[in-house]
Image (cartoon, rainbow, N blue to C red; front, side, top):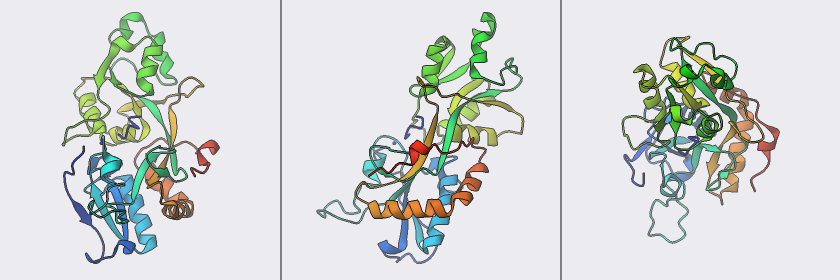
Length: 290
């Protein structure tokens, strides 16, 4: 999805250490792989919800929180989670980082924990653009007069269920193309959507819940109508999210699972402050990845 993991093959910065001694051993570190500019998930300012949860876990473990920063684009897992600190050492057990704080549950390039939140894509519409009557279901767009439909300016990503829905609904011609991953060092996808909605380049977007939450947070209240997309047997819009570790690191997974269970309420409270639509975690998502 634009849950796309959403990934460059080179680091744009090194490592930031938080907390205590710079001489902490590997066992004394909570080593996180993260994007330096990916609100609302993570940032170098450590103001994303994934940063807050990582801080909570590190504090519980009495460990130094350490980040390896790299944009979450192609090569992210290979160059962070699976990258040895020294690639000249055969079978090295010392990796640049050990935990990715947000991955789709069951993501095939990592071993994922039990899910710690579940969100959904939403139809996010700027109010006062002529579509304020669409409040219950995105399908209401397809019942608008043809003249109104033809004036739609809706962001359309190169991948994801939103584009599939537009195609199935006969609204593909009204889509304005966007990339799910951007090489822009100053904006991530959510930041670009926020700017373009304000500039009236687009009037609406089908956007993954956390990113929609970021856009909402950048404007006064009641700026947007938010309509959750409805999953069906043919098209899924809601997904559980987990943390990820190396496939061989079952002990780390077990530890994170315990922390997720211990701090379930605190985690939900943290995420809720970011205007992210949350759904009950589906039972089918809690099966073991082993």
